[in-house]
Picture 1: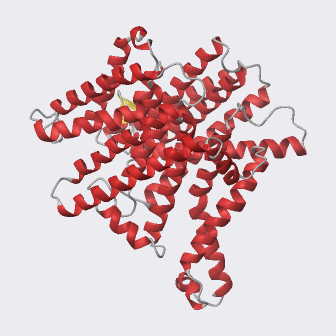
Picture 2 (picture 1 turned 90 degrees about the vertical axis):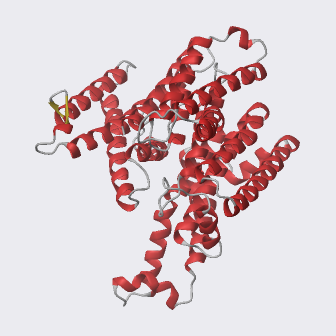
Length: 500
């Protein structure tokens, strides 16, 4: 839990430090630094909110575990809240904001924390045993951050039009078109379940107004309308109509996002279509090969899934070198497909629901829930988040590779070597071995040496290897320590250390 609560703020703080170096070299403007500061305080509010929730839930009579150094957890929570509010307010007033504007921003950040707590409680109630609180925090903080940013832009538009406000509702910097497309489309897909259920409920009310509540779910069957067709039409309406309209209003996006994507892909058709063909070929060959192995072989599924980590290396590394901006868009497209496929699997949407469920069952293990399968999401996000966060100015050539190095190389080698040769275990109850950890650290260092040589000629001679060795070692030890889905945490920790 503590690991999840500090990972996102640490990553945002590291990015903030990197952007501050860019300002001193006049590569970015002060508005970008202010925007990154806003994101940092918003993410910190999300983390503080969840920490306070957990401490108050544990603050039971006679529960000594709810005390930190003899101090009740509620007192610590109150102190942390006051410290956060004072630090944030001083940071805002230091920018020469008016008092009312600084207060408005502070309240807005606190709303992020409240929304994160409410969303985590909802997720853990609806999907128990699918994720720990720390893992849920990573997902909900990202969702709240995306939604809060779009909502702030919308409110700024409305308030500036109605009240002629001089200042924007929040500070925001220059966002790339890819960032805007990813934000709008992914947010639309994440909000789609609520939209879909609302459409179903309204349809049931219209077609079954005289039926009891227990019969509302079968309302569509009485009029011969397929629930699956409602799903597909609702999804099309969300992605084709609602989300683009919102983006055009809030972000002044003057072209339909899907049309922009087509234009972007065919701006350099040879390189980007060739890369797409390469991705599809590698992924299809790997999926069919590993699926057949899973049905015929007795190999452990945890090792079988590590082969997908190696596939991630084959897929993503060439793209980072030759088409890094296109890779940002491809990561978002892959995440969108994963989300839609998971909805189809969970709701058993015809005709793909049973097929997707059968396929996913071949790769799940004890860490996946019967309700949600999230391991492939954590692998994709683990590779994508460092790349997304390193977009724009970046003076650390290994930062975009943080997820691929830690998951595709380090985690894979640690599991394979530890499983085959591991003898000395880190704990009596755990499965992770010292031999595996050493192999993972050594393999990442070798990969860093190769990537530095390829990424920037001559840079390897000026690379400070002591900080790099420290970053790789700490990430490797953390991978051996964590019992959660380390795909979600290790890349962000490694990214944070590489940015410094």
